Length: 253
Image 1: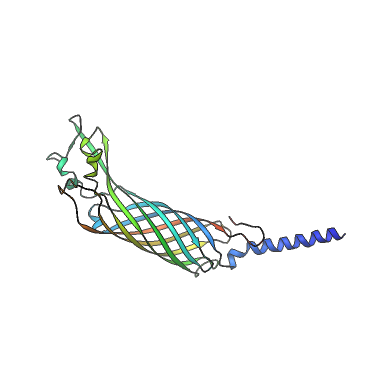
Image 2: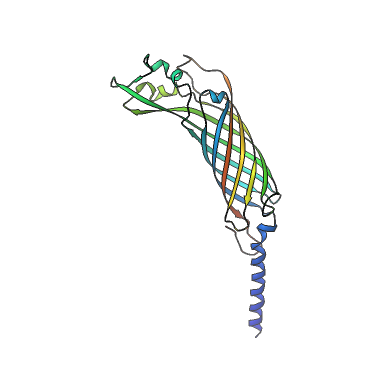
């Protein structure tokens, strides 16, 4: 009898603890790691628009949200796009008067130009818990510091073009890189039932870049210009939170 009553008491305590743990996200500001997949649609500004149009960036973010709604993020993004301007000027020294490229077999070939790059930053931010289902959701503001680089990637569509292969390609790719900082604001949602967790925001990146190549074929020398590159974009992050273990035994996924 005593053992049965003891079991009932333990079961009731266990149920109460479980119910409390399940309600933590909806009524408590939780601290948690946030593993995130990120996508951005970006538009160029300043010197960046000389060679590039809009692009996409995909990346990963490892973040941590504190119990005071502070955000700490480390993120890496891969930049890619097919909107490249100034093709004629860029390839003028290896083109015929009609703008054609002759390949290694003496026939015309076709080249495709793409934007490639990468960007990593460390960010800090704050969530203002408004317009959300719980105190973990709301408008957020972030700022970050990091490094950004971009270049022109040239591909041969058919045939071979030794003029732009190997080390020769480095003389045409306009590789630039340098210090960058960013500002971001948007809305972050952490659902009560882990069904949907995401952030959607506007991001502005300001980068101070310079040429990372020893020789530029178009300039017939080293490019010592200092550039200012801007990216304006919409960013969406899909998040997998790992809420801290409750005092008893539960994780939330």
